[in-house]
Image (tube, rainbow, N blue to C red; front, side, top):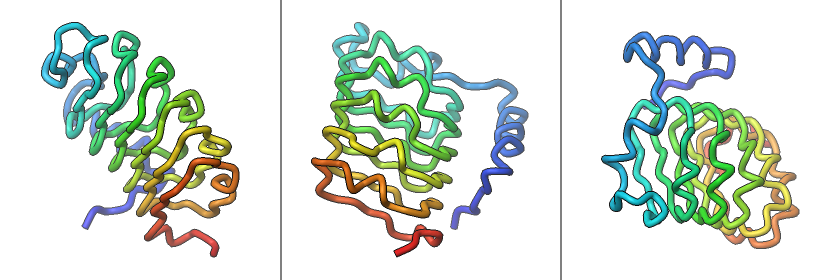
Amino acid sequence: MRSAISPSDIDGYISSVDRRFAYRMTLTKYFDFATRYATPELNDALYLHHKGITTIANLEPYKNLRCLHLESNAIRSLDGLRALTALASLYIDGNLLQDLRGIECLTSLRHLNANDNVLETIEHVERHPSLRTLCVRRNRIKTLDALKSCPELASIDVAHNERLTR
């Protein structure tokens, strides 16, 4: 069972991850191994799970991505995704996200998996025009009010959010 990390412990956790690996990872190091085509615009999927990534950056050339896998890293922010306007599926499970700030600019996003983070709010998905599936299991979400205004939302998984008021 994965031990829970409180929001106040996140900085300490990141520091220990940085000391253990002796550097802060960004996505650039893994592009050659995670893509199918050498020309970034031709890739429709990028697999960057389990890489120790802490910061999302340098994705501008991958503007045609439709699917991005960033599971099990140490990502704390969705900054860096703004250029991925064609992105339809984002898998960001098992990171250190406290909120989904930045998801608003991914207007083509249809599927979002953000299980096993430290999410306390999902307010940034409010009025999302195309989101159909949202999975936010095992987080710290307190309310689902933001989902009332998501016109396309058809499936949601909020199991094991102990702070959620029903």
